[in-house]
Image (cartoon, rainbow, N blue to C red; front, side, top):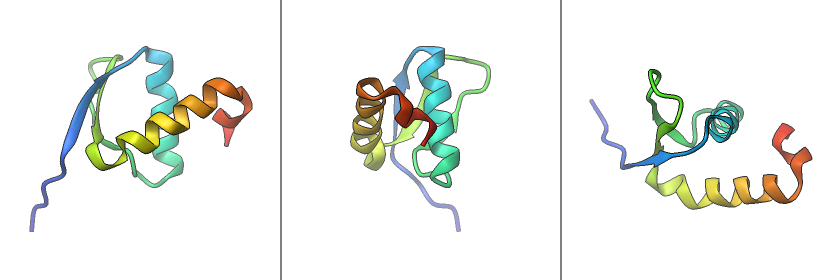
Length: 69
């Protein structure tokens, strides 16, 4: 049966989108609902994970080596 997931459309720089895509792969698709493939600036992210994603990105800006983790 189909399931609906609440999502939030976010706009970001291509470099940030690449980081989010990496985090999503590492977390078994926990963050992204839809990658708008034709566009390098937009993603639809799970509403329930938006705060967690913001925290993780903020930590990456403070300590750049955490991007690899």
